[in-house]
Length: 392
Image 1: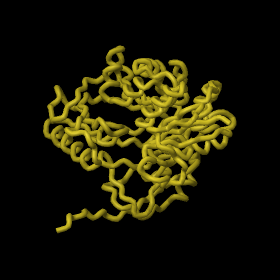
Image 2: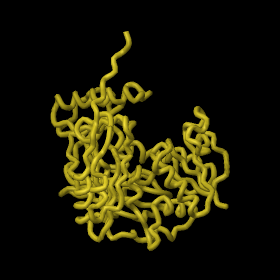
Image 3: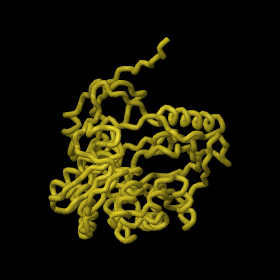
Image 4: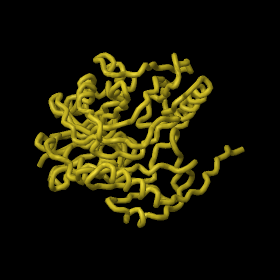
């Protein structure tokens, strides 16, 4: 029996998807994480500690940026197909990725790193914490006062999250106007195979950059820019999730990450007549089956909405309208991830979504309309979160 190592930082939707995919195709899957050396199998998933993993494996899969770094090291030791450690390190570092993109002539914003509020050459600009993923902590500043406020706010967030590197390093870069897009792909021997492209129809202009809706296929051509971006980083074997801004000057790569699309969003992607999930496709590819890259998406169009947090958030109590949302034409599923009593806060401090909406159909426009209609049917109820006062 073939054996695959699934490297993850935590248990979650994606971890379960890959473990279930392994069972479906008859391979033995082992979960490796960074928590096992301090906790004794708390989730009863038989996970092993990733830093000391010494078992056998025929393939390795990574879920997330830090797991990709661990997987790259394991792949080198085991002679498995995966991105190189150097390529993963470049892709997962915002500053280094920008430098690599600029070096090969890709459209790249001016950018610099700083540990103190060093004013940019012009406004608007965007401030980003170096150690957080997605849009968490990312803030647009339109002037000097907003810049200082954003810098302090990000410092406070990093301190609250227990970041260990002080002083905190932030990246400041030019704000790129335009629409945003994404690409899901997989690489073999340096060749990029595009699995899906996405429009992000909601404007992402700031001051915060909460992603909500992905609709595929995109009406924007991304293949050439994506191929140049992954080549600049040296990515060669394994999954790729890339994001772009597009305006009148052309296509600007934002990132090309050595991992699949995050969370439950991957559920929107199915391939071939048998509706193969993305996790299964990536497992088969990691085990040497390159034919899966030729599978077409099952549905002509599909989409997912990551349900945003309304207002100021708070303690989640309940949601009304789920059945009405499920009844919207083209909606395939409504997944509410929130549990009663869970605290939610919006970006830039927050890092969670309330749930996910899924749709499929014949055209991107009807998918986008269905997701918006389903979202409008939902009514979330929150209780205010009371601040905690220190004991006297």
